[in-house]
Amino acid sequence: MAKLNADEADVEAVTRCFGEREGLGHLRATKRADVITLVSGDIADPFAHARLRRVSMSHWQLEMPAGSGSRWQATPFRGPLPDVLALLVDSFGWTLAAMDF
Image 1 (cartoon, rainbow, N blue to C red):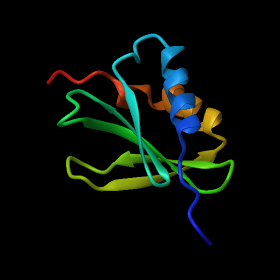
Image 2 (spheres, rainbow, N blue to C red; image 1 turned 60 degrees about the vertical axis):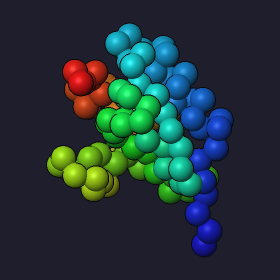
Image 3 (cartoon, one colour; image 1 turned 30 degrees about the vertical axis):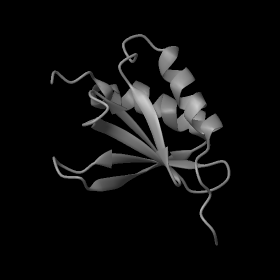
Image 4 (cartoon, rainbow, N blue to C red; image 1 turned 90 degrees about the horizontal axis):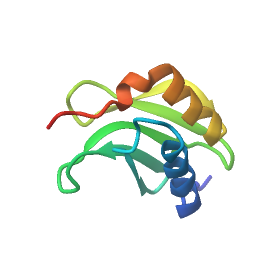
């Protein structure tokens, strides 16, 4: 089965979600293939906070950084994009905090 890539509408939905929440204006969303990564900081050297992987047409899985390396750990949380974003912000908001560089 072919992967379903993230598209610009998905990135816009993520960006809109952060625009509606106080204190998340430092975040931006980038996409690559089936993943939307939530980053902040310098464009040349961004800090990755979390990422969302498209697993079906309407479901996304939350992934979190595994330590200080570039590895990612899948979480058991998956569902429609708005639901996964709400879970991330409401339950794991500390992972989205602005980093002092």
